[in-house]
Structures are given as structure tokens and as C-alpha cells.
Length: 364
Image 1 (cartoon, rainbow, N blue to C red):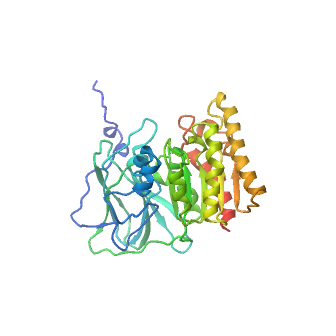
Image 2 (cartoon, rainbow, N blue to C red):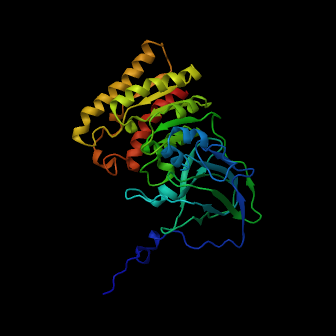
Image 3 (tube, rainbow, N blue to C red):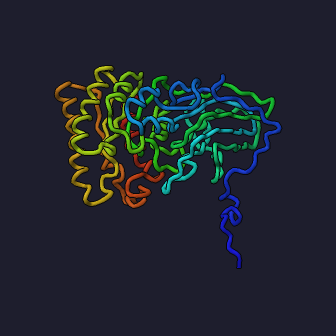
């Protein structure tokens, strides 16, 4: 009996992208009009997409310089009446991880947007070949030709140097749906904030929250390296944003580090915008291991102290606290993380529900 090692021979649905027929496809660089790129820094210039100015990333740390090239939170919006949409992405570096899908690290997914209601719903994925190198091409088809408003989400951990959108020759290409507000929600934090380990880009809790609120967002989660260094804090303080979400407790190396940076970051960002809604979140993996509970309590107390000082010393009416322990407080705790730390898709939804409720009230 012969053994079949390629699962796609047993189940075609498990295969990655097959070859794409592009004979009747016309490609557009997403840096050109009328495509609109969100969530990335100076997206229409430079030789690769990034989330921070290189000088800010380099001044923060070598790790953040590298991670800033991951395109978490990046999106391109447009409309077309093409019955086929093809992407061609150049990805110079693919991060493969034991606990994450290739779709998370290197793939793109597609959402259908309603320009009137602001609703956005998942439609499909552009399948990435498992052994891909330097990028790939893939397509998604529709059953009819009619104008649709689309959002394509960039990879959470991949690096993308170029992205082209292809439509059937002669099809229209126009403006995408608009967000309810030009100012974005800015999320700052850890690998969990960056999106690890959602199965695909649209399921990062940051994406879910922003999508449900019909808001633009910027994902400044840096895997293992959200540490509130002065350079990145000063940069974030200069952003024109609708809400700021601080979610870096998980990456603060020690409780002492959290004490030294948490309120300091609040003061810096608050000084730049006295009325900006500022949300403080404590670590979500509160009970991942029994010996971490005491430290989690201590860390939470540091964040609560920042919150109390903001309320009582500054009289700040635009500061909010969310207890990370509450995220996975349900009967399915064992289903909320991949490895005791990074959320599964279900874990991301749990986080999004709690965080989204607070942000919804803020944005009223």
C-alpha cells in the first residue's frame, strides 16, 4: 500500500492556489488611483509596505524595525463589476510558524462592503500555495457581473513589497466604500494585537472591532516587542486618531517595566490631545499558567493605578479600563487560545466583543 503525503491529492479543498489564467485580466498597482490603502504608513511610496516610518522603527528597536514591515491591519478598498478578482503579491519574506496558518502570515482575504450601511462581510480567501516563495497569484470569482465594493486585507505577519489587483479586461474599477470617520482607531500592543494567531487577517480582534464599527484602524502590535519605548510613544502621540487603545501589558518584560512606562505613555499621548478617548487593557492570557496568576494580578494593578491617576489627578473623563481577565471568562476557556497565550479565532471574537462594546459606547 502506497502512502500519499500530499493531502491535496486526497482532498482538493486542502490545496493551495492553483495556476491562475490571466490572459483576459488587466492588472492595477494598488498604489494607483482609484485604490485606497488603509492602515499602512505612506503606503503609496517606498519599495515596500510598512506600518511605521523607518526612522521611528529603527529608533525604537531592531525588532520593531523588522516587525514594522509586517502588514498587519493593512487594507486596500475599491469597487469593480468584474466577475473575477485576481491578486498578484510580491512577498520577499514569509514567516512560517508552528502555531499559525500560512493564511495568517502571508495570505490575503476578501470582504464585501455595503457603502450605505457600512456593513462588511467575509467572502473568501486568496489561497496561498504552501511552498510559496517571494509571493503568489490567486483569484476569487463571483457568480455574476455587477458592481461590488471590496476590501482586501493584507497579511498579519508577512512582508509585502508590491500588490497588484487584476480584473477582467473592460471591467470597471472605482472608489471603495468609505469609513464612517476619517480618523482611525489606533491599537498598540503585542503579538496578540498584531493578530497572532488568527487563522486569517480579517479575524484579528483589531480587524473585527474596527469592521463592526465601520472604522478605519492602524495596527501597531509588534510581536514580543510592544514595550512603550519613547520613540514609538512620541510618534503615536502625533497621530490624528479617533481612539487610542493601549494593549501592551503582555510584552512588558517585567512588572517594573510596566510601572515605568504605562502612565508615562498615557501622559505623553494625553498631552498631545487632551480629549482623545484612551483605552487601557490588561493582559488577556491571565490564567495561561497557574504560576502567572499572581503576576497578572500585579500587572493589572499597575494599569488600574494608571487609570485611577488619570481619573483622580487629571480629572480625565476620556479614559477607560478593560480587564483582560474578562475576555475568556466563559465555559470554553480551553478553546480560546492556541498555546495558552495566543488567541484562536474564537478567542479573538471573545476579545473583540468586550473591546468593541466599550469602543461602540465611546464612538456614540
